[in-house]
Every structure is written in structure tokens, then in C-alpha cells.
Image (cartoon, rainbow, N blue to C red; front, side, top):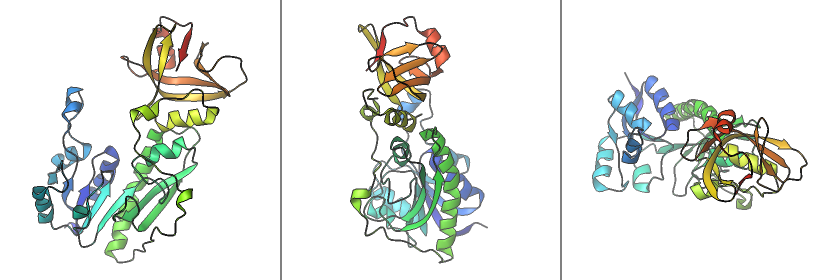
Amino acid sequence: MKKFPKIVFIGSTHFSLYTLKKLYIKQYNIVGIITSPDNPLFKNKGEKAFSPVKIYALENNIPFLQPKNLVNHSFLENLKAWKADIQVVVSFRILPKKVWNLPKMGSINLHASLLPQYRGAAPINWAIINGENKTGVTTFFIEEKIDSGKILIQKEINIEKEETAGELEKKLKKISAPIVIRTLENIIKKKIKSIPQKNIDFSLLKYAPKIYTKDCKIQWDNPSIELIYNKIRGLSPSPTAWTFLFFNEKKFVRFNIFLVKKIREIHTYPIGVIVFSNEMKISVKEGFISIIEGQIEGKKRMYIKNLINGLKIKENLFVQ
């Protein structure tokens, strides 16, 4: 016998999938799933066109919808037909009121930050980029303004000094499902205590807007080696920090950077010069950024030893 209430799960990513699996395994009554439309561009690249959530729905015979338009009449009628008591949202796009206001018990969202801090699309990335040492997850009731609904439950974790966004996401993913389940149980038992996000000093808030490719370009002339280092790990593995790698000022290629270490050291090199020894170091104001894993345009991601061996030119290289 599946558990009350009737749930519509809304999500698309691997982060979403972790919570969906836990709910399904624990026999929560998932009457339907909303996930993103298929992406034919991924299929052309040899990747799956389906979202991880859709694949799971197909494997377990769970009904699903893939709306392009969330206010489409046909979609809304199909959603209403599921007669959900509550909707659970994990890692999805902004929902219109016609969707989130539908269930009688409301719609809850799992956000990967300690709200009200880091409202927005990329909280995991921005927490690391900004050098935070703590973050967490928050469940809240969805309301009109993005990520501003009444807070239900929060769980805080530490961010390690060398942690990347990908590593932090894995940690947050593992704590997200128990928090969603705890939130659901408290709502069902009417033991939930919600905290309004009000009386906030907005000047103290840090935001997490969507990150575009142009935002990922590394500024090597930044006076702080810490800020450069945090940006690289905060964008790893996705959407990925990058720079242009120049060969003798005649040829340049895009160079994606995934893992680095920082070396604080006084030197006389101009900013952006590449120095080779047993490693590949890029000169910055307060020392060097040493590359551990990178990817030259058109090549595979690789450790620096293999990358260095593949370079035909090892003199007069610089980044910009």
C-alpha cells in the first residue's frame, strides 16, 4: 500500500533523481512526474536525449509529462487529472502560479542553499566562488517570488577548502532526500513549523544567478589568488572555468580548467605566463595557479602530465 499523500514530483537533473529514488523506494505515492522536454542536441553528441528523471519514470512505469509551456491548457488539464495532494520540486525551472498553487497541501521546493542566502539558479557554484565555508539545503513552500516562500527545514554542512562544485553537489544530494522526506512527514502529521522570509536586510544577501559561458572566463589579473582559485573550483566540473591559451601570439585555443592548486610565492613573471617544470603553472599576482586537470579545445579532459606531453610547444605560452 503506497503512502498518503498523492505526490507529483517535479525535476530533471541527477540531483533531482536522488530524491525521487528515495521517495519511490520508501513507497510514497508518486502519481506523476513533470520533467524537462527531450533534448535532441544531446543525442547528436552521443548523450541521452532524455532527462535522468524521465529515464527513471520509464523504468518504473510512473506517468510523466514533459511540458515546453507550463501554462499550456492541455498540460494543466493533464496535471489536474492526477489530483495531487502535494507537489515536490527539486532542481527545475520557475513554476507559474497555475502549477504551484494547484495542490491543496501546496508545493514544496528543495533549494541547495541556506535561504535566504543564495537565492537563484546556481547556489552551489556561487557558494564556492564566494569562498563560503558553510552551505546547506532548505525546503520551503513555493510562493510568488523566487525562493522567498516560508522556510520549512534546513540542514547545514561544511564546505571543505579544496572542494569543487561537483564534490559539494554530491554531498548536498545525499542530504536532500532525507530533508524532503522529513518535510513531507511533518506536513502529513501537521507538525510543520514554517518561518516566513521577512524582515530581511537585502543589502546583506548574496545571490546565485544563472552562470553563462562568458562569466566563466578567468581573469588572471585579479589581485587575489584566492578569488581565482575559488572561481575555478566553483565552476568545476560545470559550467567550467576557461581561458585562452596562446602560442607565440600567433595561435590560440580555448583551455578549460577543472582542477588546480594555488601556490603563494613571490616571483617576477608577468601575469598569465605559463611556467613548466614537473607541472604547468600560471603566474598571477600573489603566486601561481598550478593546473592539475585541464582540457585543450578539441582534446579530452586529462591530467596535467598527459597534457604537457601532448604539447608540441612549451615556450612562450601564456593565457589571457
